[in-house]
Image 1 (cartoon, one colour):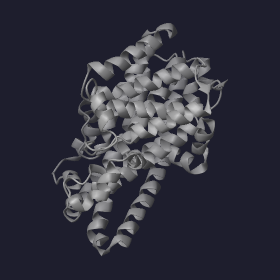
Image 2 (image 1 turned 135 degrees about the horizontal axis):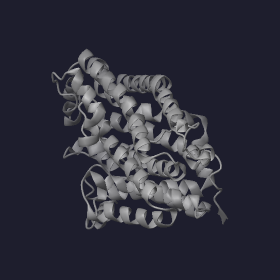
Image 3 (image 1 turned 45 degrees about the vertical axis):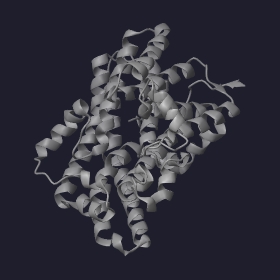
Image 4 (image 1 turned 120 degrees about the vertical axis):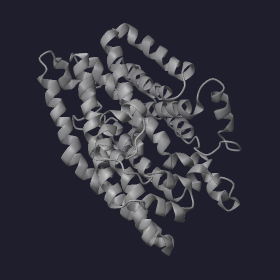
Length: 407
């Protein structure tokens, strides 16, 4: 059993994992909107028994956007802690940079959604009528909201409430920002010797002592603990243990969104629910096991270093932000116009949606996301008290081509 290599270079497999997770999110919402029984279960419809069985099986992990989000949380905790451990920038500057890193692309996505809502009003409701499910109908209810509302939503509402009318996936940004600030503060006030006990305590508190949205911060603290173990050389190469962790992570990640009664997850969910919210705790544990397993199982990790996962890793933040309005408005409109012609037309519409989403995300990455990251990197490097270690810090090791891809 060999020790994992020291963090001397960028770990491309984490970029690829992030990209695959982002792609799973867009597939997940595609399933939710247009094949809801595969996500929510049959909801009492006997004719959808097969879809119900799939929705409640471990196969659900293949399109569980909810689990993919928890992978993002753990990865963000890993990356932010790596950055915080090496920087000597003052805490207010770190928080301001993090806020700008998230908010600028968020603002662009909200403005994009605002334009689409006014271009194709009621598209989601028309498609929902054909699908026969409430989820699409719930999105983008026709309202006369001014542009100033969209700007306020991007600037601070999503961080305060976790709610967004124009881009529903922005609920994660409150957790992203709060988790980032928590780790920056912890690393600013705690020395190396007390970080691990402090992170363990925070993980236990968010697991057992609190409820509601702060429970999601557990993923951040688990990611930071993983960085601490990795940075201290405590993660060993072991293919067997890594494979078992990956399988365990995928199994836990398959926790259904549908009711778990009668599924293989019923016992696990009931046990965890007795002392902690199973919805977040099981998925955070699964994401942590998956990522740790990929660290230990080199061959599996290398699968995410191929060209396609790396491309999706590059555009992952933009892909996450831009896909939702394209789905609920753009694809809904196409589905309403052409989706009644049969399975072939639905498949063609879905492929068109995926292609347009990837192309739009690439354009947003090149025109917005990457310039934002480069500008903020210059701001950070211009600070006179930055550490020389930043040039080789794990913050860059865990980022894509020197630019932050965490979200």
